[in-house]
Image 1 (cartoon, rainbow, N blue to C red):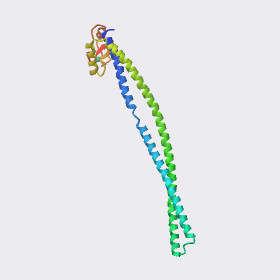
Image 2: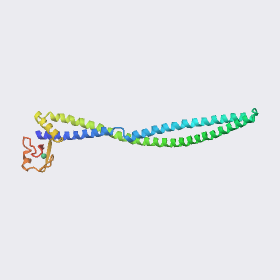
Image 3: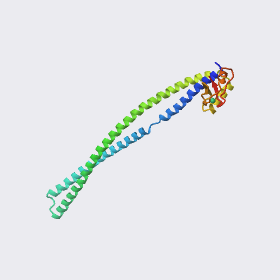
Image 4: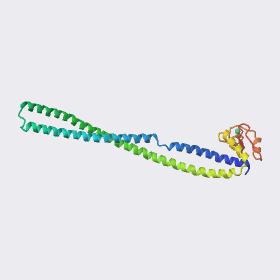
Length: 231
Ligand SMILES: [Zn+2]
């Protein structure tokens, strides 16, 4: 293998490795928990808290109603028990019972409201749960795909790096340094191929005589972009 062929092979490996590095970074970014999942989880937590709130509220409002019914019953027992003889006292008690009953109506309305709110909260909770499950399932698949691709990239890159090491061991240090410098200054492409008469690095059309030089022992550079040229 001539020097330029080794450098061209090195370029092929490095271009692939560059592609893997780019894709690896994209995968790492894509592996962050998606906003939709965070939002769905948040909605689910809120729906659960709201459901819990209305369950407790319903219970406490029902207790308030039973307490009020008990209170009314006890006052009515006094009223109709025949123990109170004073008419003014009877009227006062009667009024008190009426007032307690009016408040009972309000308390019962409160229970009804809590029941309706609870139904809504249950429906919202169910919907939020379904949505979360759906998004979780989608993400699980997506995440699995990304992780599989990531493993594949790591394995491929490891193989390429091993081949790269074998190759660089056969290239003189000065040529390798020249190659690395060119890679840095030429957007990662140090060795360009000659396609027909054009340089694949810059697209310039070069004199036909240049092709002949590519098979000699000295390295040929593109006069336009200064990249190393290979057949
Ligand atoms: Zn060129």
